[in-house]
Structure formats: structure tokens, C-alpha cells
Length: 316
Ligand code: DP6
Image 1: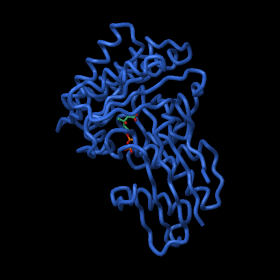
Image 2: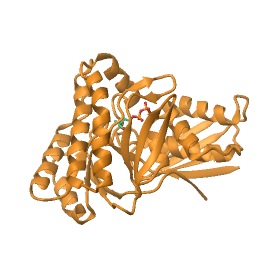
Image 3: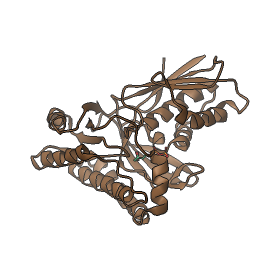
Image 4: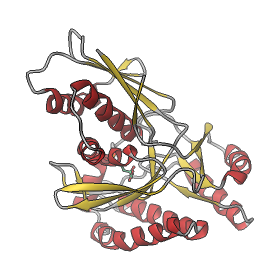
């Protein structure tokens, strides 16, 4: 039997960085994200396999294998038959574009259906989050908030895709895999950054500011809190031992380009995750201007554009 699901990556406007329980993979802070509609990961689960295998875009993906096998054991039981899992994405994986979010969100949706179980959306989000924290948010479309709720997380929609149709222009400044994966990197930050506790302590205020900005469709307030929260997370990364600096020269140039555009009246702001790519969020009327300006930055290899999209779902 073959079951397939599609999930879209999401980009955090208020970031998750740090775990309060690394065993259960529970985040130390809440987060708010937007789900990208034009980037996707399709996950196929085949239960007629002769051995467990996992391929990503046709290549074996051993690094994801332990987390994937654990997920399949949970659903099918540890004495299950071999299962073949294959996925395709239309964007670079492991380069700070949240590919693990769309991978694990599509995995739990497809594998749960293949196992014949029925889980609530809340349980699916918690299952995905136990595999990769940011994946819990990809169960939801549009704007989503992840909150800590006891020994679980609770994810809810803050606003749908259609009611505030923002666009995201992604400047790819290096397409190879990142040096330190985010799960490992945030543990290093928790243990070593002198700013870590401050980061955790201020998160509730940042979440409230972003929630209000989204509710009121206040672009300029959302720009302000998103960039602040992003740069604060990167300060925690930079002040870790060893330091984790994911940016390159083009990353910084893109940030200045976004600030110049904003000074010229363009509704645009940036955010950057555990990688060197710059995600510029703008209103649809400015997409061409933002694309052209970022495309001219030295070191930008290519540009991807996406609108907002739906949560993870089964496909034919
Ligand atoms: C910088 O969700 O990849 O993208 O739970 O260890 O798998 P694990 O971490 P992951 O971390 C995402 C970090 C981030 C910020 C964010 O998406 O909120």
C-alpha cells in the first residue's frame, strides 16, 4: 500500500530556539510562523517494502533515518514489517529553508494514514513536533502560533492564508547543507550563551507583539518585531561557544537591501533562520521590486518566491 502527503515549510516570525526537554523535544519558547504555499515536500509511504529505506529527492538520507524509524515504530509497533519512505521537495534541503518542518509534517500525516490510525490535528502536531519542533507548525496554514501546554505543545491558527496574503521572496546565498544542524546548535546555545536566559525571558512579549500585529494587519509593527526577534536569536547563536554564525557576506548585504527598500516606502521585512538565506516578507504589490533588488546583490545565487499556503494534507 502506498500513501502520500504534502506539507509546506513554514518560516518563523517569532523563532523557536532552545529546548526545555530535549528527550521529548519540547521547545523552551513559543513561536509564530507563516506557512509557504509554493514550496512543498511530498512524502510517500510504501508498506510493501523488503527493507526499511529512506530517500530524499532520490538519494539515501541516512541522517533522517533514526528519527523516521522511531516515528514508524510508534505508529506501526516495533515489530512492524519494513517500510519504504521517499520524499521529493521543490527547494534545497538542509540549508536553512525549514525542510525538516515540511519533511516531518508530511511524514506524520502520510504514515499515520498508512497505519490505519486516526489522530486529531492536535495529536498530529505534537507527533510532528516530537520529531522536529518547527514541524508542528506545518500542520497549519496561514499564520500559526505554537504555545507550550504542559508536557505538550498546542498549535493554533492566528489568521488564514486569504485574509492577509503576504508574499515571501527568498534569496538563496548558498545552497549546500548547513554546518551545524539547528537541534544541536540550539542545545549549544542553551548551555553556553550568556544571552540565552534573556532570550527565553523576553519571548512572551515578542509573541504578544507579533500576535497583535497579525490581528490588526499592522505590517510595520510585524516588520519591527520579526526583525528584532530574528536578530536576537542570531545574537544568541553568535554568543554561543563555539559561536554559530550562519550568515555570509551576501546575507548581510540582503539585510541592508531590505532596509533600503523599507526606507523607500516598500512594505518588506526580513527574517533569517539557521542558514545564510534571507527571507523577505512583503505585500504582493512589491514582490517584483523586492525580487529585483535582492537578485542584484552580489552572492545571491537565485531567488524563490512564495505566497502563503495550507497545512499538511493527504494527496493522491
Ligand atoms: C531557526 O525545528 O529544525 O528554524 O526541533 O531540533 O528539529 P529541532 O529543530 P528545528 O529548529 C528550527 C529553528 C529555526 C527557528 C524556527 O523555525 O522557529
